[in-house]
Length: 239
Image (tube, rainbow, N blue to C red):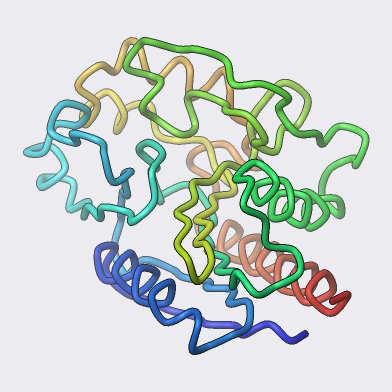
């Protein structure tokens, strides 16, 4: 089976809307879709049920010219200033589709894990086996709280995701951590910075520290993106 590759550059809400539209159209497309996207401006997305005004200083976001987008999936808040985002849409007619949500996470994240092995030891990459509780505000931030079936490098999260399933298939929205966030920016835009920022530093793996040359970051993102494409194409071709 083939996989359709879609590449998009747009504002965050338009990209989230595009993912939602692809999910609605999935029965007509009738093949897996890998959606690779970049945001045309500094962006943050958040899960469908997140009260974002209780998480972030909206005025500070305006000052920093950071745009917001509500995802059609669940999950928490993701700063897209520091990651490589992607989406996979899998039709319910595909042999790898499961009605068990965690099996779908395992299918996608196994491919993500494979795509990261050129950069990190395969022995150090694993799935988080359980869902640790965190009732603090950090629990609403994806890179501050690992969750079950996230891809871990040692004891740190490197890739997470959220899914939405419909009759025609599911949408898996993923994020691979690339660069450490700016503590100064986090302190400005987070309403509970003292509780959230330290956990983002403690629980996430980053390939680069903050302040790295943007061109170096972009080149690395392109290399990882090519790995993602190759691994997804190889896995889909098995069916």
